[in-house]
Image (cartoon, rainbow, N blue to C red; front, side):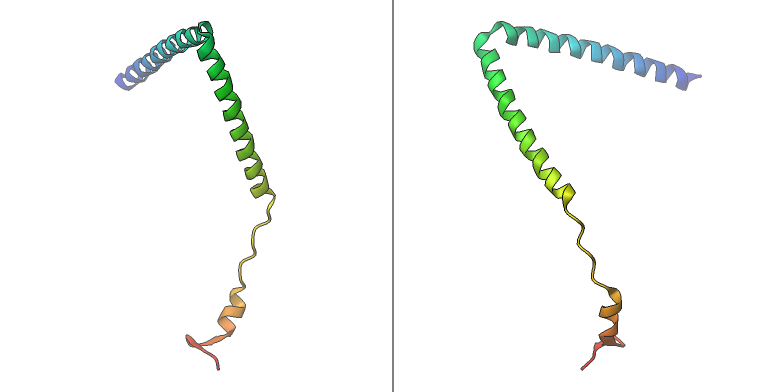
Length: 88
């Protein structure tokens, strides 16, 4: 019974924390929107960040298209040795 109450209180605390965080986020957003210089700088930075993310996505797509390298056959490696020594 105590564990259920603890879980409920934890969920309630996390919800309260999220609400407070959202209040701060909205207040910051309003400050930025009212300050024209800050809003312009934020818009420019967002453009640069979006460009960087697109470049990174392009690189990831290139990696995803590559086929994996085949591993060397163990059969060939083993056949070249006799009891741990190389054949002559």
